[in-house]
Image (cartoon, rainbow, N blue to C red; front, side):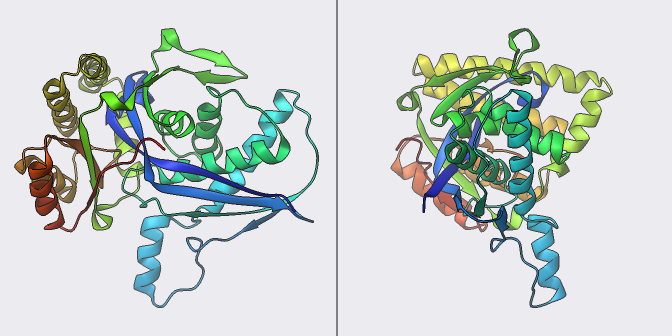
Length: 336
């Protein structure tokens, strides 16, 4: 029996987010410390097996409340099911022939939930990779993120942008340009321009997250999208600046100007804070990191932060400040 295991890793939005959903530019890195994994094998029927996150039994109502807050009502099964549907639709639209054997599939994930480290898209990318291998279907690399995004925005009506999916497909450190004039339509999908950058150019990077500070991504993104679509000038000007910050950060990396990179990370967060009503617990994480001299911004929608530090003494101070408020601190593993 052929047993297929496919993984996709967590990610950190390093610079530019949340402009990826607004024709901006971003710089993101893969975080191999955490992953979503899918196991798939040929089976009599097409069967999706529930994981530990798809619970139907609880010790109390408060336990159920907490589970729904973190995982929603459907866990990750809806992501797997929707990915299978979108994969099948993609193959039909593009005349791709494949065998008709059925399979059993299950997923598991240790990516911290609801803290902005791309746990949902990790499940989708891992599922997509397993399906491509099982059905021996090749989907262009630059199309895979757009297909993965369509699972959430098209099939499940969940707000999101391409950034997470691009870096989870390409891995490493990736510069992304989503400007309308540089967008192409490939296989019916909108595709931006993506460039891998050598991760060795990065300064020292840390990350931290708090399970207690987690919240669904829609809490941040839905109001922002509404204001943008209504034409609010402040939001449109800010999205342009996020893109400019990303260009400047890329130039700073290539020139090894780490102090400038540090400043741009801080500016990215400060600009975001000027736009959104942020959670006090999220702001506390930023302030704790900056009190140690590190730069800090959200890694995604909130609950996890990312930034730069200079040396081991500063990392120790950073760790002390963040663990004191209940955060887990680590250094992201970018390369194999």
